[in-house]
Image 1 (tube, rainbow, N blue to C red):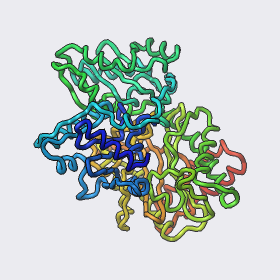
Image 2: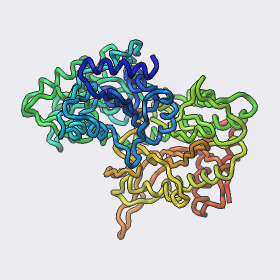
Image 3: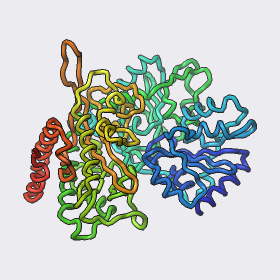
Image 4: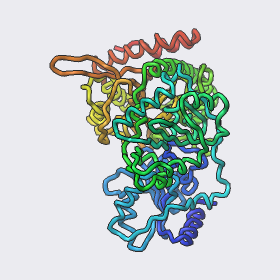
Length: 595
């Protein structure tokens, strides 16, 4: 079926069920950022494959909302369909809550699948529609009824993350959770988010591509802990580990039955943005619901010393893979046929040579020339897949899942001659990167407080990038992890020692080029003074050369030059022992000092 035919079929179902507007979000039952194929309902209905977006279908309109990372991609992928693109974040563009409020009338109804829709979105929808007589219909998965060849739900095996990687046992983490529950006067903590469940129980899986999680629910009380999971996913070792750590196991679908049996008068802590409406509705009347960010989200954001030491090892392995790839690219571009797709495959091959590698941490963004202006571009055979030539810029944003941790790094590589504009934009991006990564900041600072440091050199030239500057990174978990981030969007989460975060400013010019320089850092103590107090810094984890061929030294200050030279000295010292003689010579040249 073509997109317009799918929308027509959906409208027929909507009419049969008395639904005026139907919402198709980018969610699974656990509100995951990345979804298994079974839950890609928004992709199926719209053809838009980006990782963020919402579609609303009414009797006479179909609209897609997505943010600035995906505008170019979305316009290309929905072209030829009746779907209109609403660019989220642009002044004057309503979000879908506002659209429904302004376009529906008394007696209309809004439908959605309550098994995937988070409680926070339902509450927001109710607030927007409170002054109108509009019914919410939440029991139908209409896309599921139409999607005849829908992929099966994932059935990967779970595995235990050894304490030598995790740093703490599941029992220790559960006790930490209970301590936080006591502070919040909570008797129960209900968990729906897969990364939080994986962290607290020290289990991992392969249910979502690139995210080593296993589909499940969790429930923790002051005396018990439960994991609700398809039990075919557990082998004897994993089952024994969970039981040894005080975790009871039951079937995935039984979570609501357990919640319904919680005694009246008990306090239940939830994160309404990570609990679906179906499970929320199972909480008995008479129980007090305490809402907030998941307790586990805050705990896992601060990496323990074992995790940090393992992360350092992972980034050395990742750096070796990247340097070998960059050397291979330098030796072969223009000599053999290399496309965006084959380059990404070659990079994964180098990663797979590293001990402890499991899988990529996200789909590699291998974007040549103007394709790199699409921040989350994905090359595909038979669609967009440029051949690389000895000219222009090639952006590679990639990462790996290792037993020692999760990696994420972006380098923009010079393949041959570049324009003065490209060189200038690269250097301005580098200046912003150095400005933030080398910053000393007062304890209590949040990511939104320091975001401007990376944008300042760009702003002075009338440039900006329409996305955040940095995101948290999980430990053998999601490559995007909260609650901290570096962004212009206000954020009250303090940057604490042990938090891992990316620093990735960029320049994106549609039809021309895209540039991004990304390193991953861990927040650490710096100095404490009588007159200023306690100060923090960023300690760099990533060690991969920054392409000097794209740097206009005349635009750099002496301080920036010193930073770049010192960084490259560290890159060579840390990575060269794992390279061949020819690769070492190449790396020596790529990390040479500049004046």
